Length: 335
Image (cartoon, rainbow, N blue to C red; front, top):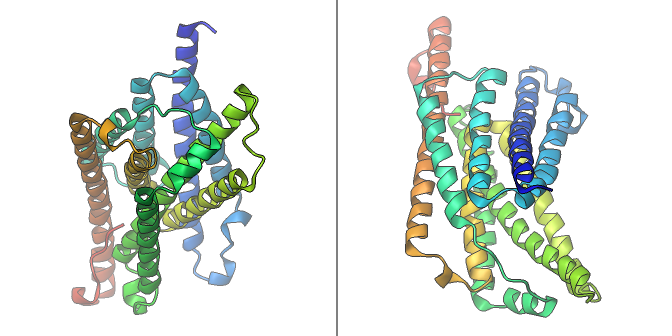
């Protein structure tokens, strides 16, 4: 295919896939919101029985698998990182259109900060990786530095999940506040981001083995280790989807998805640097710009969550005045 035609196709597919992915996430969030509005819990259906959630999940998976594959093949890095950031902008727009979230100045500058931070993180974090054989990958997996990093990250994930478990057993009036929902939703997003980054690392390793098997005519799947690698990848992939689903039940896509994007990229960077023994390959300038991008993105997420806090407080004050309940009994919420 002509390079210019391939570039045009990549841009079109990239914009379409990021938009479709955002629509999928927003539909899942909308499905959870509509179900939570049902007063009688016996009327609430599990997600897999809801048509809106099914469509949203299908759109999300198709956009990720097909769209990402075409983009990686057809687009140069600067365009790829910009298109990834456009997905975060679509999230904010769709949250206002489909979820009826307020569009304020905080939405505008929060979205701009999120997009700018995403571009910096995506652009300066990508580094080409050399090809490896199965034995080389196993040696890298057994390196003490990687084992310590991997185990500590999983311990951290377990600690976060324990925290969310404890928050479920707060007194009822505190457990159901928007602030607690925000904390739990962000915690699930953090877990999803960490696990998806680890899944990406295993996917890269598995793809390397497949490519080497095809190009070098050397079957790398004769032993059980590569199959364990694939099983671990599937487990982490399904786990990160599950925790992303839990996060979507609690907080808006305009807050959750940028946060997951940030955590995912940071952990993926560390995974690559530690796993492939390449800590010296990241220039100080790139590291500084990645850090700046992280700060900008998190500042944007904070602005978007403040926007929702303002809306929640207005709603709570309206309820207080209508029911004539002392204001001290209601905690201002976020979410």
